[in-house]
Length: 353
Image 1 (cartoon, rainbow, N blue to C red):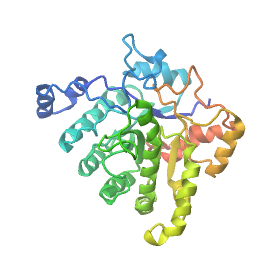
Image 2 (image 1 turned 90 degrees about the vertical axis):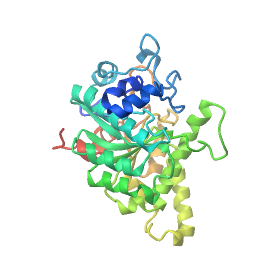
Image 3 (image 1 turned 60 degrees about the vertical axis):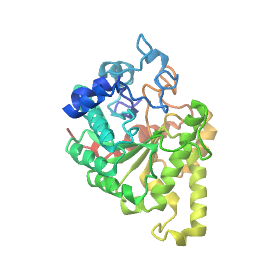
């Protein structure tokens, strides 16, 4: 692989709420201890699920890796990445209390800065955003001066669709500071993750994330959020890839029939998405044969949309198979270097902490 490669999806595991207490003020430390809140697990990424962490990367007790040293040994040094983006999946959006959500997101972000970013200059990170819009903007403004933060991070299934005007101040703050909007698989569990109610099994919920991504993308386009903020890049993380061409065809076809309803969308949705939306390539949900992948890339009609990611420590490949088989060799510099740098303004020359 190229020595300038950028890993766009790495997941630092928060061992528990106790890890975050030093990064909270006295009120929240006291509140969480008194209420006995020792963990805040998400059904989206159960710690013991096989997909949550590769078996060879887990600790002696089966816990997911949770230190910079483990990340360096298992991913960064092993594959020689020039940079890596940390996307913390601690479910700070789960508390209904906006104040608690904001306190947890702030603590996670400060923990990331002190225990991860300060320990390896190759690392960059997402700003974990709380579930309140005002609080999310406040967190963006607080951390934006630290250029090691390169995007804001939200789950694909939150409280409301991400294009709704309530979210426009978040989009504006991200665009102003040259930050992308990272949308990761996962849920705030305000609504059933399927359109027909609550599923019984993790595999149902895990698979249903693709519909959350589709809904988020349709919202961002049809509400005019992307049109209002043409400088905003949106990164779909762990969404898969194969669903996008068919969805864009359907969205664009429907727009042609009812475009009078949303006159602010003044060009085909597929064009808007190709300009502003990017996808990480793990998990890569296509067959291994090169012919199928070639057709998929042709249907995307762009060589700028895919970003390399190992998705450490999630179990989406074995050994050192850091690239899905079948990708054209000539496309790899785009996916691993050029596209990440074009997507994340703060990864370009001149951006430093």
